[in-house]
Amino acid sequence: MLYLNWIFIRIEVKPILKIALVDDEQEYLDGMGKLCNSFGRSAGYPVEAVPFCSAGDFLEAFSGGSFDLVFMDIYMEGMDGVAAALEMRKSDSGCLLVFLTSSTDFMPDAVKVLPQEQKYIELAADRKTVRVFLSDIASAATDAHYIMVTLADGRGLRCRMTMPEFMEKTGGDARFIPINKGIAVNAEFILEFKNGCCVMESGARFPVRVRDSARAEQMASDYHFEKIRSRQRHRRGE
Image (cartoon, rainbow, N blue to C red; front, side, top):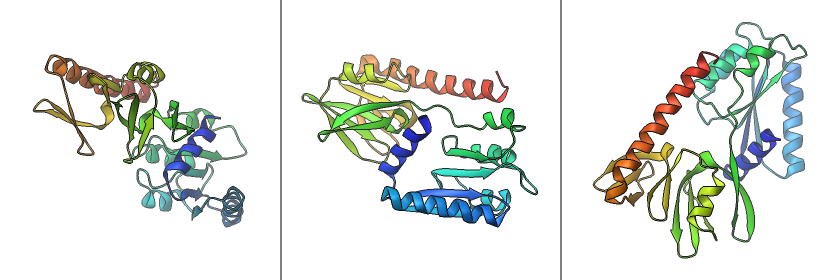
């Protein structure tokens, strides 16, 4: 169900669902391509399925965000699917990956390259309820009786709620740092703190209360430090 939710959100954001098909047998590439195109037609959504006959060819074309979904055969000549997935994860930790195999021999290694669980919240905006990943929210700011939620792609969702209600929805996620009364920002998108402002990667600037400046900077620093430690523990298999 998590994977289905992930696909739903990406479809909302991107105009085309890009799928990579990686298999060293042309018969299976053709079959998967037909299935993907059939899905696109039945769902009424444009799908681009790109075939690769080897892991090497796929990795040469792959970069972070270049594909929404990857179907990867495990048993291939040369580099196998698990090794290719490990390389893929170095540049994209969130892309949905589906292994294709009739054997469970590689299952322990395959689990290591699954994307980390992503949390999402439901927001009511424009008379409809939308699901949004926390990782896609750059900032939230009060606007009268509403909250303007700005996403990483620049879109804005105007939701009727209070800032405490928004923070409660995030479940206390450490990424979201309150920098002023009615303003919270995602630490992933902070560029710097400068001249009493929190400057975002998008260029947006939010005022920071003087008395909260040191605390906000420390929270951002603590979040990134813990993120690095978590990655190190994951690599060690802890």
